[in-house]
Length: 456
Ligand SMILES: Nc1ncnc2c1ncn2[C@@H]1O[C@H](COP(=O)(O)OP(=O)(O)O)[C@@H](O)[C@H]1O
Ligand SMILES: [Mg+2]
Image (tube, rainbow, N blue to C red; front, top):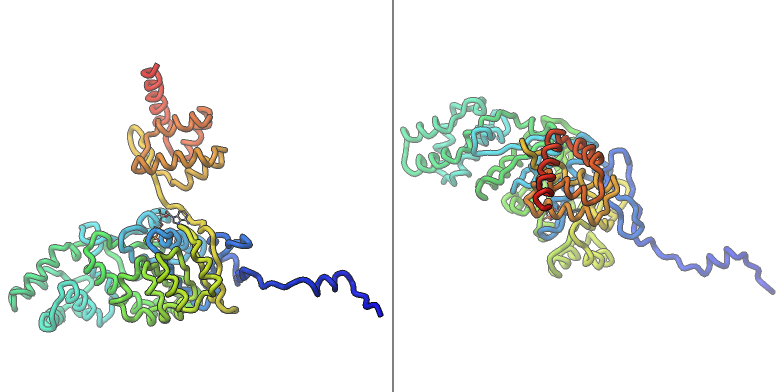
């Protein structure tokens, strides 16, 4: 007997079924999602939706220069613009100040008159006086008896320390009561200028808009104490800001490995934050920081280029990525990453993002006759591309700008644009778009004429 079978049936019996080599990203609300880049295999646009994951926290890990900071900057700027999330950055080395400028946020510094008095980092609560005693104690490395004395002398400031505390008054009291070593230590602290800042804020202000606490000017031990204080205060403040199922605030700690060790309670911080709609973004070079505490508390793990085999072994050990994923991690380069996301309605999924399409927040300055004009590098480069200038030529200009310390004379820009074949009218329109006044453009042309004349 001849068994008849349709062509499609025949085909389906002989087709081998392979699993998809890349999962499908799933999103609850695309409107709130942030575009990150395309996936490596199917080139699917990959979006992050912090609210559709089991928690909104994110950890980026990778060697220095692999693209963690670039990624975090782009992500938080987009979160701020698209979702209106408030962002607070504990900025270890001042690398986020430009990002803050880009979104008209605020940058706080210490140790100068226009800066912030560190007392504003404390949560204003009745027990706040203990916080102040702890802060001072840690900054001067006080021993138990010194701490006791400080705590005792601070008693009069109870409940109202934010407005009334003066370090000099405390020093004078110490001088009267004990003097000696403690007097000397506190005087040193006074000289640091940490209590001199005249900018007034309340801790709540840190969660309005985009705020960068720039610690870069301080020495490492002071940075640690302040970062620790900020963490504690934020945790105390959270309940007052109310519970929330959606992310409202983002706390960013880059180079977090410097903080994680002294901060024993990172797990608690992650769990508490989630309840109150706070997302925590952490970047670290130390792959060893990716311990179970972090993995079980952070739904987004981004692995950037790693240093060596030992680092890959650690990743293998935490069992977050498959062997296949780990084998593909060898191909990571600057600006690409492996992203594992634990969403509410699925198991953990991981995606290789071949290039993070971030935001350049770098500026350069066009030097005019009367002043310099700041120009966004990315916008400038996109504009040139838009008017038809070849990528290779644009790269030449970008290189030139970087080499000349991010300032360029207006006439130099004009002469390059002329070389690319732009007409005088086109150049005028372009420069006006970047808010260069006509008078500057005329002057630059005059200078150019002189140069040509001299050459002739
Ligand atoms: N996705 C990207 N697109 C364009 N440039 C990038 C990208 N990722 C990183 N870079 C550039 O590479 C350099 C190093 O990146 P960075 O984010 O500072 O690394 P890390 O924080 O890991 O040390 C920076 O100059 C940054 O602008
Ligand atoms: Mg970095």
